[in-house]
Amino acid sequence: MHALNFDNRWLRELPGDAETANYTRQVPHALWSRVRPRLVKAPKLLAYSPEVAQMLGLSEADMQGGEMLQALAGNALLPGMEGYATRYAGHQFGNWAGQLGDGRAIMLGELMHDNKRFELQLKGAGLTPYSRQGDGLAVLRSSLREFLCSEAMHHLGVPTTRALSLVTTGEQVTRDMFYNGNPQLEAGAIICRVAPSFTRFGHFEMLASADEIELLKQFIVFTLQRDFPEWLQTASNQHGWKPISMQSLEPEMIEVWFTEICERTAILMAHWMRVGFVHGVMNTDNMSILGLTIDYGPYGWVDNFDPGWTPNTTDAQGRRYCFGRQADIARWNLERLAEALMPLLSTTKGLSNGIAHYDQTYMRTLMSSLAGKFGWDNWQADDGDLIDRCFELMTRAEVDMTLFFSHLAELDLAQPDIATLQPAFYTEQGFLQFKDDFQLWLQHYANRSKNTPPEVRQAQMQSHNPRYVLRNYMAQQAIDNAEQGDTGPLLELMQLLRTPYTLQPDMEKYAQKRPDWARHKAGCSMLSCSS
Ligand code: AMP
Ligand code: MG
Image (cartoon, rainbow, N blue to C red; front, side):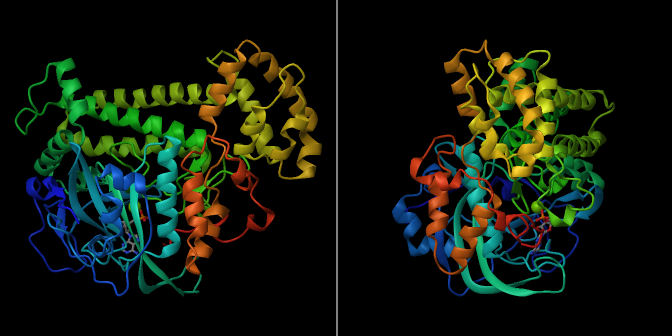
């Protein structure tokens, strides 16, 4: 195993917890607590992402070697690695939840490669001071889902944390999947996640709520320097800022930086809406400061288009985090972040500008994504109405989102015929009931689409509409097989989702509607936070 270059600034520059024993507690005046990952019996590398390995400068031999496996399982720290858990708080389902923290994520340090910084983090590697009532562990089911989906999102071009490896521990973990008094033993697993930074809105909320304002200030300076170096350089030139430090930090810097976070978050939301991704638990502790998709739990992919759909059974009543509300929720979360920054500012003006920038960026990006999905090269005044009508019909008639756009690309604009779209309808009845309405819509659509040159139309539709997405039942099949020791389907999905926009003739079984059996099956349509 070749030597890795770690530069653990979080530990070096931010204050840590004086207590070193590992028990659940409140941790004041610190951003991290030292912890050792727990030892596991029989680790096995189920899969790894060659793309992430390459990004980190890890060779195939490194990845297949025993030393790496021990590190990825939490049994050993490689030279330069240090175990720690970070302290954050958050709003969960709209309510203030106080201190949360890395309850089952253990940082291994900051790996430097090619002049880039990557935080490495094990998820499911045991208890930390932030584990509260949890066991610090993760099961194969949810770990495989996170591993597979974070890589799939990357290949879709959606900002996301990455996943290096999926390891089973050889141990069993008890989970009551639906919180209904049916605990079962499941295979334990650990993934190694990778991102330039895992910092969440909740890290800032923690310090503000504890009234640790000097530390909040220090953490903002740290974040600007470590996590936003290029942006800071450009912004400093633009605004004529002095090099950033505790002494030179000005309100304007915080406000302009908040606006940048708003922008990234808006772009992320437009991506989720474009590809039909529903995060499922958009609590403020699951919001990345870099605008990455983070913390894959009971997420899901839209099959039949429905703004009210949520994959998370825990949220089935309120539907706070359903597909159609994601942009509003992200905005609400940004307002909570803004509140956490307020102690360092004297007026709310700059932060309100940030929120306004969020609204504008989201609308602009969404409109351009939607224009792309429908095959247009620009946005015209009536397009919003035309699209709203389409989405309304899709919802009422139960039309598959991904398939709809694949088939729409094949429409003959000279003679638009609803039959082209029939394979995207879930039921015969839905088709029969709505085909006349849809036919009328198609005529308006064909009219609207005529002035976009055919090659532009094709290019737009191909680059905005994935042909393959990780439908929930597909992930579940990979899980069922992996639990029986067969990683074939997992590896096949990894391969498929590397080029999600490209037709792969021998993989067309994955460009189909959700099968009927998956409609109401656990893991396929119903997921919970239990993981
Ligand atoms: P999540 O809903 O997964 O974003 O988790 C919210 C909080 O609960 C975070 O602080 C997690 O670290 C913590 N948590 C979730 N599951 C566990 C677990 N099994 N053991 C310990 N902490 C957990
Ligand atoms: Mg979380």
